[in-house]
Length: 271
Image (cartoon, rainbow, N blue to C red; front, side, top):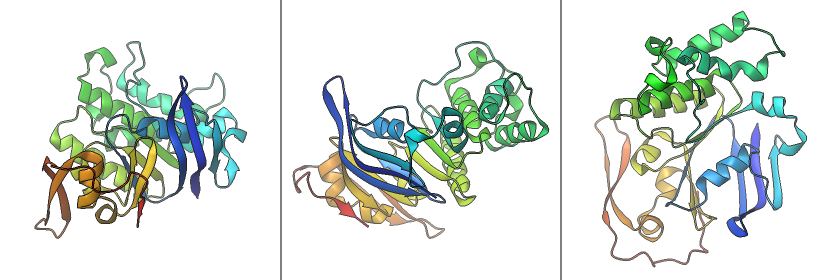
């Protein structure tokens, strides 16, 4: 039920990207991974997906070394969507989404009834059913993102890792995507998303993990992790806070902060 990083360090092109990362994630939770540009968020997500090996430390899935799983088992258990993950040729949206079922299929076999049902569910949940027969080159950037999210959902994996899932989406589809990811977590998946919109992250995520300079600097419920001090120090902003008519509390980044040196970067805020 857990996906973990244990004392992980990542070095790319002789530059340390992540240092001393200890993080234990549980299924059934929607975790937002936030931080300024260059903080190491996407690299951390790639480590969780077994796409980038750490130079130090371990990555575990339910206590087992993630590297000990064969590629097909990893693909069945961990679905991932990264920025720039197009398909490169004019497949239809339905065909793109069906790629998510490849880890479940035997070589040279067609879609089973279960595969077809999973594809249909994913098309409906991401509101791209009406685009099923369109080819990728004909899609807008937002439509393409929703189709690729549908492909990841079609895997029906235990873990769903998504990099900036609301990029290029209009406000309505941003809300839909975040609600969908939260719903996937409520159905038992572990969902981890790299997010830049702190307001959406605070509203929809159960847990916020903050990276800065390749280190984990805060981890907890949104109201615990996204403190005024942290927002000023890490993001250089102030925030307005309030309560919506439905009782949901919100955090809205509001202005540039006058100071971002109120705390040492070595301090870690935990919930």
